[in-house]
Image (tube, rainbow, N blue to C red; front, side, top):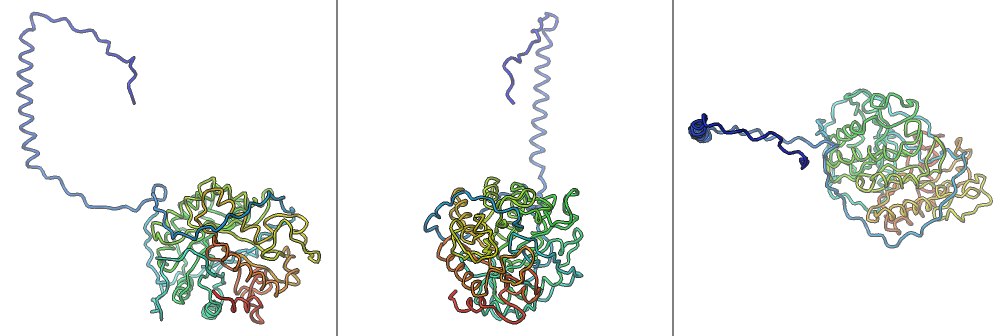
Length: 490
């Protein structure tokens, strides 16, 4: 702090006395003797003293203070700007809508289903909590599995699987389809039901099996345990932790355990919905704080892992239940999304719209579910959601980043599950056509990364559920979509 120029010394100068003329020379002589003595003592001390050499200690940076190097492959450049779309009307109200260095022993080388659609919460399903088991002895793979280093951040075929199914059989299906990426959703509350007590259990074997089969793995990490959540939250709804650093610490433990086996992490899921935000949509600023803490920790443990922002669900504004997903993405960017993500997650649902349909003009007079045709909104159609998100990215100077569709698909069911009535309008043949079309459109755009179909096998593991309506495997065998995906080049 600079001193104010008004602050000046105020004491008057003393008057000199003839009786004290001898005093000044005496003081000067005494001061000289003392100065010489002190100087000699200092030289002797400096010559003889050797300072101890401190032990070198490097503390890992904490998420709050770590400056992270932004590490990612350069994605493909945008070929052309997506034509802007007009501001839509909201859909009907009936539409449901540090890092500390972990100490876990690594496994050479995670799962709760995602809802897939915005109109109705899926039936609650919890991965059974298991007793902690010893880390399985690594099995020597027949071929070298992919590592995190050099993971391709570019378009690729991916699919979400239910790991509760027979792993070897599921692995065979994914290999037969020619997909390179698989996605699991890992529930934090199932892994760490009590603070510091981990139930990795079957996950060690799941991760090892898919890793050694040669797949790249995307983990979606969600669902804070009750002990980590705010005291005043709605515990009947899934929700985030009170402290983002608690979540970051768990991410660090998980990633250290499965080091080299995880190539990408999606941080949370559909946080613009009340059912994922603890009874109310998570404010975008709070979500970006959660993402930021996770991003710093992930980059500290393994800088090559791709961090995907949690995909909002396609929705309009429904007070207390949902925030329009494109508006929510804009809010995420305003809160700093660009600097704490390697890719942008998106869930482009199809409802009963063809993949290439323009949400502003699409028409189907035979459809029983009338939402896309009578209350137009981007969220009804795959293409509308994808183009809407890309336009937000361009507006925020994030053109070099890729969109990752971490869930997309079309439901087929007659009779449909409650609140999924649009599934009765779709046929298996339409599902096959639109899924293939969506993959091919995304590849041609040039600004889409790995793309994950929702889903492979919930039709077998959970028949009759809303998840099963999107599955391309059923108890009676593969659907036409499965057969169509077999035949297209990848």
